[in-house]
Amino acid sequence: MNKLNQSSNFIQKLLNPKGFITLALFAIVLPACNNSLEPRAAAPETNVTAEEVADNTAQLVGKTVTVRSQPIKKLGPSSFTVSDKQFFGSEPILVVNASGKVFNIPADPNTAIQATGQVRNFVIADINRDYNLGLDPNLYREYESRPAIIAQSLAQAPKPGEITTNPKQYYGKTLAVTGEVEDITSPNSFTLDEDKLFGGQDLLVLRATPKAAVKEGEKVAVTGVLRPFVVAEFERDYDLKWDLTVQRKLEAEYTNKPVLVATDVYPSAIPQ
Image 1 (cartoon, rainbow, N blue to C red):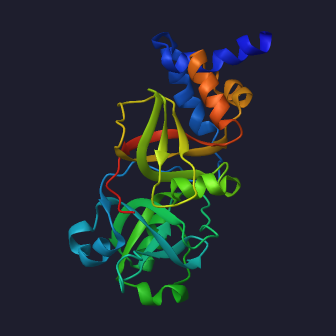
Image 2: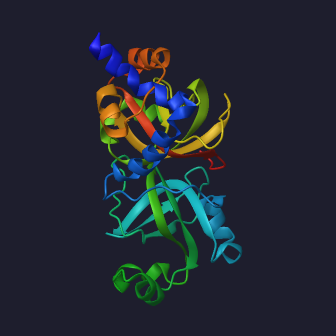
């Protein structure tokens, strides 16, 4: 009985308006729980495709954009190229990691990457001077004066079904996931559905401090860290209280399954 009472504390704060202080603390604690080597994904200012960066460079230079695209080639510890596979023959775009955090290209070449940063015409002398990166000129000759994204934020961007099918490779990582809102359990929890990937289960999303309500069927992008759903660990790390009915429902359906603990949720305009 004591375990049930202790466990019931987990969900109540998310739904209880009196839990505002705890929710605010959760928003502060959450980034601190992230892997310090993982650059945090940012909510985009302008969503574009890699093809648009290549074709409309003059209009985008100096602007901060977000691109969700496939990694093509790693050039060095701080750079790689991306391209839109849905556009045959599109020009690869150079992405330079200027976030100050290590970012590893996904082992699965089909897993997309979300990069947020400023569009620039790549001049290696200027980039090395401005960001102190020490890029090797010999590796970047063919990219000189071509468009590049100087990324301040990077995240893997797998689909919900890819995550739920093989969650272990994503645990502890910062992710940027796009999908359709399906099952809204509470103002702080819902699932993302990816009907394009057969066999994958819905992905549970927990929101620390929801700024706006989501609607069923709405296409959203969620950034956050993936963790297995273990009530005791969430209670320990975030000191949250949930409604007992919601807690029992989520425990029954998602114990030890992946949950994306969201730092940002926003309408998605990023092509999939």
